[in-house]
Amino acid sequence: MAKTRQELLAELNSNSLFDVVIVGGGITGAGAAREAAGSGLRTLLVEQKDFAWGTSSRSSKMVHGGLRYLGSGHIGLTRQAVRERQRMMEEAPGLVEPLPFLMPHFKGRFPGPRIFQMLLAVYDKLAGVRTRQKLSPGETLQWVPGLAQDNLIATSRFTDAVTDDARLVQRLISEAQADGAICLNYVAASAITRDENGHVSGIELTPEGENAIHIQTNRVINATGAWADRLQKQGPHDAPLHIRPLRGSHLVLPWQRLPVTCAVSLLHPEDGRPVFAFPWRDTTVLGTTDLDHKEDLNREPSISGAEVDYLLKVSSKLFPSSSVSAQDVLSSWAGVRPVVTSGDGKSPSKENRKHALRNDKGLVSVAGGKLTTFRQIAREALVAVFGGDTSVLRDERARVFSASSETPAIQMANKLTLNRLKGFYGQQLASLLTGKQQDCVPGTTTLWAELEWACAKEYVVHLDDLLLRRTRLGLVLPNGAETLLPELRHRCQPLLGWSEAQWQAEVDRYLTLYRQSYSLPSNGDA
Image 1 (cartoon, rainbow, N blue to C red):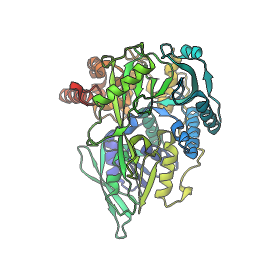
Image 2: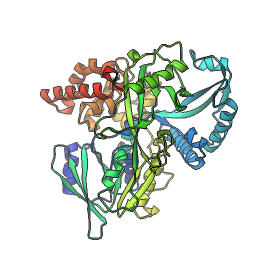
Image 3: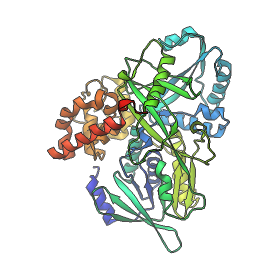
Image 4: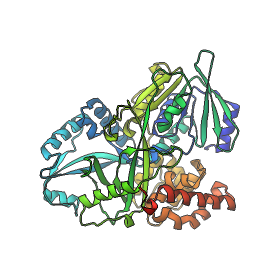
């Protein structure tokens, strides 16, 4: 039986000694908690907001090796990433799914099909699988009806993978919890304490609405992404991380307005950056931008008017007959990438995405890196915080994701939905479905049972936790799923234990947040 939030906080107060404390509930922190707990270490993970609140719920959802990195000569990084991609697809089907990519080649425009096919040959070799194919213009239009045809000479097809990044984080957290980790959202790390030699001796935590708690530990992993340099500055350091926050924004469209069954990419006519349209959760997503984010990191990032125009230009170039406009947009999201910079004035897209670690006497700070390689980054951080001792970790070949439960209780007509549920919930799925009707939220393949499970078992503290991260209803339904709120109140308010006043306050908070950060900017804000 999963413990309640209050039970976990009480446990912290009564038994506050941990082998390792992880600060940050994004993909790196969740991966570190999963590896640490799976290795038998007494593990605590805390997140100042919600799990995956930052970059890890607002990425481009791609699990890939990075053709751009390969093109820049980063062969080792690409090899590592494509092999992690293959591993995740094998261990967590339904959560990490193969996605065909098409790169159209137009006469006189870079890259040409010959060069790109050579690049893909190396990409396939590194992955150990062949997915590349060269398509004629006629074959291309069978894949993507409505694609721009003027000067189209060929298309390169290959396969990467796509995920729901927030659910990926949640799945890692549930795996860590199953192995004994304590994972808590809305708990801020307010200070690192050190002994007379400057070594970490503990950490002060402040849960939302609660008194501060002192935790004893000699090892803290600072996996706070764009905030990593802030916690690191509290201690001694010779070479601090320098974080350059870069914003990547996306638009979500009804699939019927731009029906694609694969990812379609091109180089943007304005700056030559790779941009794409891809199918996700029964919608079509246009992404992404790449620019310096200079706003307060504690505020939800949002798309600008200039970014909206930039992304709509992708649609007009790729699909000129679609006539997609801002009025068609369901929602948007903007994520802030925690890129580690040398400060040499590079343009955002030229910055290296490789992760970096700093060890300050028991405080290991980590930032940068790719969603795809979270497991290896997490293991590297854990080895570093244990002074280079690799023996503390379980076998590198151990599964990250436990096999999904197979019971007679799981019987569904829609096999795609069943596959997704197995990937999202793993061994918890039988419990989620037992005694529940399998009816879907109108207009989606999300089960009402998923919302009820999240409210009861997944530490929902605010309404946006439920609608923007545990599920994606606020992104894939019009107006942030506002029309669902009466039914949500009926089903979820009792499970959350919220009074009438608290429910209304959460509704007001959520709708304000949605309009400010997940819809389009008003008054042409640029």
